[in-house]
Image (cartoon, rainbow, N blue to C red; front, side, top):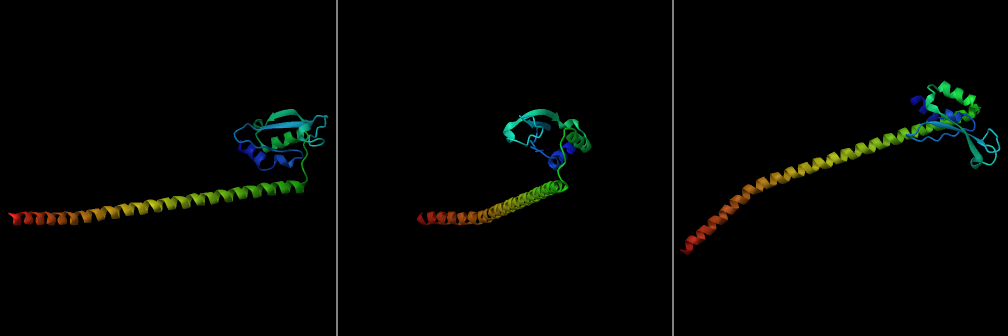
Length: 162
């Protein structure tokens, strides 16, 4: 299947005249051959796509090599575009693949930065909680001694009244 996907997505199929590839992820690869309703084999001539009628469907997963796929294209009457057109198609797909690679790399970097920021925030929160817990522990010792002194004062006041 990777060979078929490469044939379709890397522009090899579109190196033939009057071929348009519509890649639908998750669907079986089917080549649909159209002709114009006036019987002309070249469906691109005449009144446009609305005048095309389906002539044949071929399941491309039945073809195991690129050589078989190229032979199929020739057998069905498709002719290669000029070398300049083919080069332009290949350059387009290379540029597109490079742009996708760069975008994916940028996205991975964004995710890494987000993870680092979340980690930093969790660490700050943990440190803040530790500081608060330490302050409560320290303050707890002081507050218990001040409570004791207040109790002592209250007791001495009660004795004075007697």
